[in-house]
Length: 436
Image: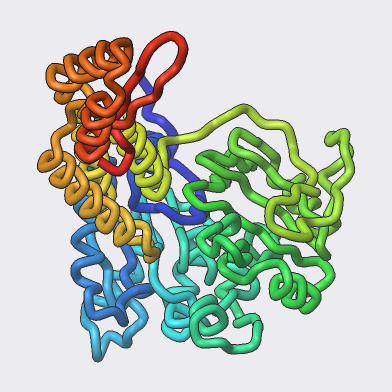
């Protein structure tokens, strides 16, 4: 049996690169490496400035080992001179030759300050030009790979005017002039527009006008991967969302399951046209959240598991329904499912508030379960029925005997105990007061 040819693949992930939603995608990509133990490296520079950098590395290594079956070596300071880091020449060699390479969360601007115009950028460019192995670039690192890059933290968190930074231009060797924008469909803002890596429509539209005429925005949705097979000269979209080529406010969306040849992708970037084989015409991009005025290429459905925010909302909804139904088993099940999801997402290195919110909701549900245990889940009507129904029957007898004063005494006593009576021609019904 002949061995499978070596993988020649470049992957851009919009977010969730170490989350449960992307496990299936990572496994499928790793399977392309063939049998044996592939050499796999993780570049830590995008997040190396963070105080918890070593923890992020450890969580990433645990994720890829446990969920994907890859034993990953962390590569640090490959951009430093050999006089400062004797391991740098070996690290650069590994960047050029390893079977699998990953770079992900952190800060695009920090990464660019370290790599742009240096040995690491040159090694990555050589790797992609040669089509060496599997190269997986996600989130912040993905934002830095294009012709220009969005300094997301400076704009969204610090308040800097929207501007581009010169990017690594790794796609240039593939003939693609693009500004890569991960988190393209982000919706964390709720009441305000945080799509397009927290830029929103207004700021993206302004930045887009500064791009060269032959360049375009390449957006990759959260929990989504754009896979460029350099050997087959084909691009494929997998995951929960899609990839978007946006040019002068005109967007063509490739949903999950889409395939497009690299020559057609180059044409789409240069001209904004999806090519003669596509039956429709591209239309103006989204004007406001919720509108869909984009051209979509046909695709097969593909949607991995729920994001942590969705699991949290689902657990809350199930718990609320169980409270109304006085269903203790389902209340407990909702709590346990949420706790399991939090544990499953514990290796996720994406920086958002989903995990904090999930833990807060979990604590709240546990408190409410305790309150329900104190108050009892049984229907109060069932508990009161043996005492109430004989008194209601006695009151009806008194009313038939026209002993209304005595009947009113019983009514007042039941009302004080939280039992409401309703007289009708068919008899008297009763219910426990909602305030009880």
